[in-house]
Image 1 (spheres, rainbow, N blue to C red):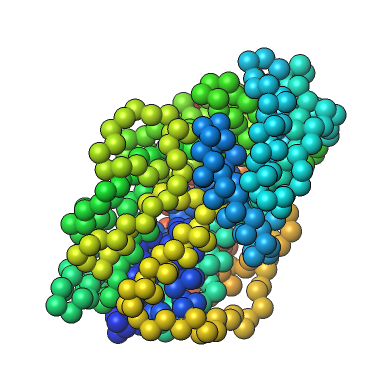
Image 2: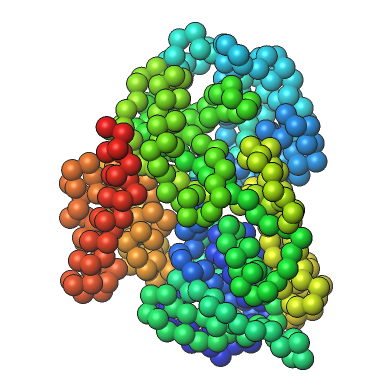
Length: 501
């Protein structure tokens, strides 16, 4: 997976499809189009999975919250997608029991919730475990006394490793001169030849500054929150658009007796918060806040963290203060609405459905909305649409390329088990920067305080060694990379936490 080779192939190939956006939708679609034998280029202006797809709650869920609005269509669709993903991708997704905790005061009726969980189970066509009540349980000591009335157990799906690596799984399954993923590659502009029915896209390597033109019969805009701006850039009109919801999780030290994900009622808007064990941390959140622009959605601020701390101290037996925060997970959800939508609406009242829109005059498809749970059916629909348009020679029997090397692994202080080695990630997983490796190829930045540096920079030496490997032992470039990473930690983590102290 040498970047220069991929860049060279991108210059010389007439692609059947160029996908813009390497999040979960783009990555899963890339996999399905490659399996059809089509020539596919996947580009992302940042790293793969660096947007919304790196900040989920790691849940593959069947749409339980839609029951409250009686959106049975969505519940049925998401439940089917969840169960199929658990069955077909067991190496990445596993069934997991969740514990719902009805609030003692101003909460939902416990038995009404249980009835809803039975209905939810029916929508899963009996594939999941039957919901049960459990009034005495191991995690009971984590919750404040007299704040809940027992618990209800039901089964969902959960990612085994991380959301970022789940995205990479779809991309790294294919290695050839006609299946080309390039991260840090922006689409600067382009034009469509109606006569040739070919798009000419201006591509720029955002790391080296190199530019080229890629040719493709079809463009598929899977850019998530950037979908609308890319459509505007190319003059593509659509009946849909996105509104944005910001979600923040706190990564807290995981208590020894925290075994199952817990869902706690919040009261306001009928909303809930989750407390999910993930490796050595427990994720607390998320917030659900409407934001007007994308920039607001990718940085946690004092208000986000203060809200989550207040709720943690109201619900959890052990007090939580800013010094207990190991990591911040902040993402922005693209929610699909009609182009004329202009209401002030609580984000949970907007559907997480996806929509696929084909431009009637140009070979351009736009993907709106969607979730990790529904990435496969979405990809299958778009793939069928592309093959139906006969933009290339579909050959479903084309075998997948395989990686011959055995993955090398290493360790990092306080991170349990083995993690992918730096050199491996560079050769096989398109890893180019410190944040790529620490945040998305591994969970270091989420499991070790201050994004891997440690509370007192005690792991700075480890970071420097990783930087040297990433930059081929060029000490000057490695030192610059470490400096930039530290500045990012100071801005995105330290400044927020210090403001609360």
